[in-house]
Length: 481
Image 1 (cartoon, rainbow, N blue to C red):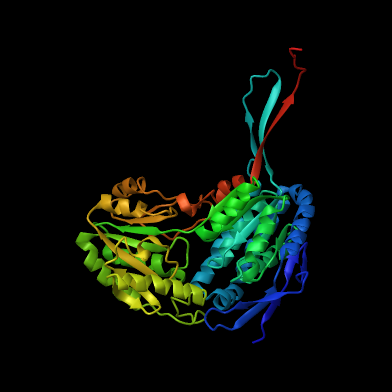
Image 2: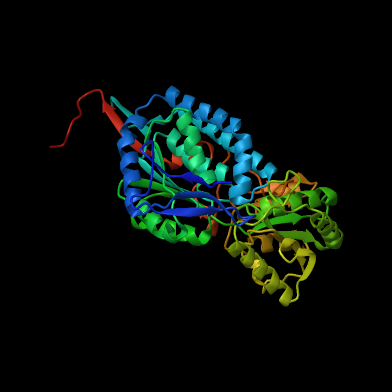
């Protein structure tokens, strides 16, 4: 099959990179070239910011009903492309059909939530000690927003990267992951343009892997860019956050996680096994919210682990385009090698493989804090099971990480679960559920090295708007001199 060819989107036009360079977009299952996309450089970033800056005033002044209509049409248009997205995600990122379908549903609802936010109040009346004065706090768009979207949930996270900024009246330059330039960038641009989004409001710059740092730096440091949002690894997030801070720009950073699922001694073990399997192995474990550590009460640990290993060992894996596949490939050979190295280090130091190994979906027990897999984010199809003596030990281990994104607590006693939730230091916690969940109206984000700021609902609008103090005097004031 001939490779798809895509150019940059700047000012509503599909254009090649200024130097004509391109880069290959590979199918992670076959290793073949799926698409060829333009490889932008810093000069192309400047062109994109030029277009966004030029479009800003008009978009900021566009009526709320027009903005809402565009976002709602885009949501419907994205859902109409479901079959296309399923094929795209299988070929570009190795996503299985269920995961791709979920990407469409949630991304469409992110657009609808953004549409609802367009007509929400944008300020408030303040009290004042000045006679005859009206005092207002008014929220206004910032300007041009730099957005970075990863490959792992490409349709959801590219949509989330741009929906709230656009709804708030900003314009956007989006840099998608080099591993998913279409699904994490150009697709949502196509959908929004078809829905009527004016030229220049959303611009997309794709790039070759070797140019990623230079392109990102050019985008973040452009003085016309007024805020940054980034979803990706903690390592890269530190760089993005540092650059933004150096240039006095706010950033929303949603980064990695070392997420724990607590299985208490009163949990329904069959339900816990199902929940843990989903939390650890959905999208081959390549979700920032994936369950990395299962902390299970020692009284039920062996029974739980045996059942979990049996279930995980039965999961179909292989071609993501096959509707029966549950676990597809990891994104690239580097990722596969990194996960394999974590497992090999654990086994070499005494851990036991209860299921999988050799690149398959893996369950490890006998893991100790000295092993790399105990602390490092796995981000692949593997999970560790750690027996704990009691609730206190489970909380201590859950908090023993630099990360703080999400956690799950499986118990049949919701009051007990809530008490534990209040002690776990994460931005998100789910009592009675595993670690992977998302809703567009909820405040999504982490603490510690999992980032700062929140996407979702009113929190997303607040992140991409500025509050101004405006007063109106209805009578002349008196001055001391």
